[in-house]
Image 1 (tube, one colour):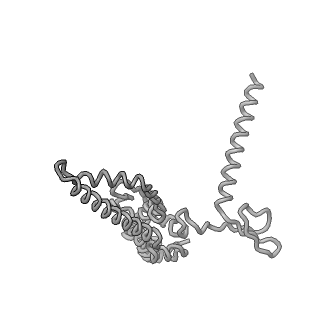
Image 2 (spheres, one colour):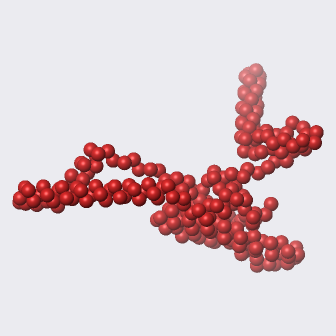
Image 3 (tube, helix red, strand yellow):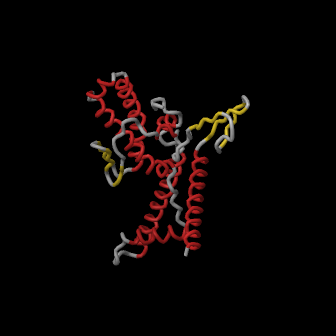
Amino acid sequence: MAYRLLKIQHLLLLTTFLIASMLIHNTAQAAVYKCQVSGKTVYQSSPCFKGKQTVLKPTKHDTGLHASWFSRPPLLPDTATCSGDICQCGTQTLPLSADSQANVEKSLSGLINGWQQHHELYQTYLNLSDEEQKISNQRADIANSACMIAMHQTLLNQSYLEVINPKATPPLSEEELNAKLAERCSQGLDDDMPLNEAESKFNQCVSVEKDNNDRLIAQQAASNNAPKFPTQVATLKLKNPYEIE
């Protein structure tokens, strides 16, 4: 019995060690370590073996934008959630439309403006004395602006990549397209219509529909190749100047 207990304890310790090792490994991969060894600076993905160590924050977010824009803003009071037609955080709400691209565009601009506003409010708050901070109404305003940032961050986490890199709809084969157009163009023909007239209307309908389809494909290709939100994305790929370290 004692041997069995020792064996169970050994297995539990081994499992704990393996989990801890995995966590350390994942953490190490997520960070960059700046090591000062014998007067030399070395950057590596694992902790420094000796010398002075500085852990550098990752600069790239999952979206490809700069990670500093997705930092937690000071005095954020709650977790932001986005679902359906609304985002919520604390007492703040962010209405959403059915158009994902419009939502993303609004949040890209909102994230920049939100950080700027939050920075100004928080810097003013930090200049107050400890006693003034305790009675200041600015904490509520800062919390609200932090929630707006968090809602924009959450929406971009959910929708940015989908909007910026839309999945291309595979084009119909010639056979599939002809079958689809034949069904659609047959609907406008009467049973008692003369054969030559029915054939003429059918062929005209198919020709028009094919032209429309070709035009839509060209428009879709041009839209997918065009840069989306160039001004906001250019700003958000740079370090957030309003982030408070």
